[in-house]
Length: 86
Image (cartoon, rainbow, N blue to C red; front, side, top):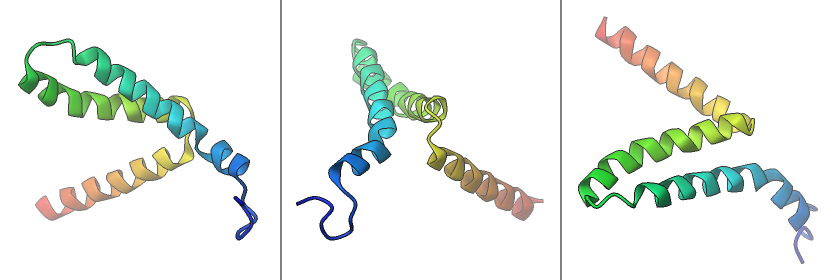
């Protein structure tokens, strides 16, 4: 029985992750569209960074809070690298 141990049922779990599932679906649709190109190397070279951007933009549009945490972490890492270089 879901939720019996932690009192966190299946419906609550789905409610918590449905936006992430939608963003993943958008990314998969984008990757499926990009696969029409005949050059596998080009698909690989463009697919990875472009699908990452599509996924992050989808999370932003759907207002998934964790994406903002990720952005803050990345900003902090970039700033610490900048300080080490200077």
